[in-house]
Amino acid sequence: MYYSEIGKIIEAGLDRDREKVKSFAQLLAKKMEADGEVRGSSRITNIINKKNLGRATMDSLVPLPVDQESRMNIVETDYDPQADSLILAEPVQLKLQDFMDTIQNKKRMDDMGLEFSQSLLLYGYPGCGKTTAAAYIASKMHLPLVTARLDTLISSLLGATAKNIHKIFEYAKRQPCVLFLDEFDAIAKARDDQHELGELKRVVNSLLQNIDDYCEDGILVAATNHQELLDNAIWRRFQTVIEMPRPGVLEISKMMEQFPKFVKTSEIKDAQWKKIYQSMSGLSYSDIKKIINNLSKKAILSDAIDLNMENIIAEVYLFKTHGDYSKEEMALFLLESGVPKRRVIAYTGFSRRKIDRFAERMMTDE
Ligand SMILES: Nc1ncnc2c1ncn2[C@@H]1O[C@H](COP(=O)(O)OP(=O)(O)O)[C@@H](O)[C@H]1O
Ligand SMILES: [Mg+2]
Image (tube, rainbow, N blue to C red; front, side, top):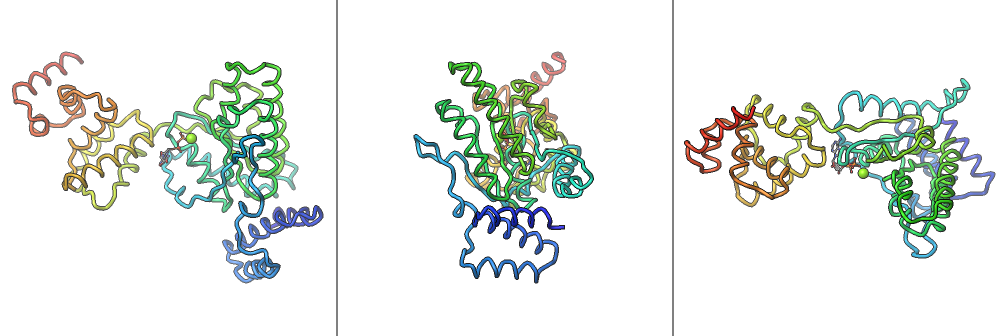
């Protein structure tokens, strides 16, 4: 059941890699505890502590890789307990779950001679949860997330890039973790820059080589907003590919349940909520989160903590126009979103006649 961890510990012991022994022993203890093997787990923890290795987390044990010249860290490590609030459409959730299940059953697959690499590519529109999903996977698997942003890596000198890439993979191999390569398309985008072509090819090849080596054992997640930039050689590397789409009505409705408690929305009826969700279609999760924040902020500032339908839809309008706003257009947006005329009149202060004219215009536009 714990073969994979025990195997790693033996391997690390034979390599005389103290930190690796410890980090995999900690992982083993954590897994056993989660399975209810509390006594066994605490015995392992005791051994670790007795050897006076302390309770340190992986980042203090294994030094973070740094760029030779700038001395800046080229990865970040993180353990994000908040990643649980990921909201996804069911098919996407199922695919993610399937990826995690497969990894958890790697030993069984290996035994059956089934080869697969533990690699996942997430792609889709910005703000739809790719970075959050990487943290979610790590958190669900009780592993730290090691993040490297390829855009910042590539922007450094190419010569150093290949070295940095190698360092990242070496670092990730030394402890149980999920390695996350964010902004993965940066590797392809660099082709348009002035970098020398041969040199770039070497960097790309070295990245692919590192991915192949790493994925025999390690868990890799990569994310990109520009899937069209990735070529076949890159796509082929990934066992699982998942598109992270923009939220549909159901996901929007779940996002909208996330208002802070002090903001009351009980005035809003079900049919009105439907219109609110529709007014938000096409927005990303992150857009919706910003709208919720803006509304909450306004609710505090104006002491008006009861929101109604037109408050929210007007905020959607403001968000979509990035503040370049005309009150006439806002009135039109409210009408189009299904806010009743009398409410639009009250909200905008426009005359009945003006609103009637808008409504007529809307009808003829259609
Ligand atoms: N599926 C989601 N469920 C809940 N919140 C989300 C989701 N996707 C994005 N968000 C919110 O939007 C923010 C940005 O998302 P992020 O994961 O960085 O998007 P991406 O990496 O796809 O550009 C996150 O901090 C999170 O709060
Ligand atoms: Mg991201």
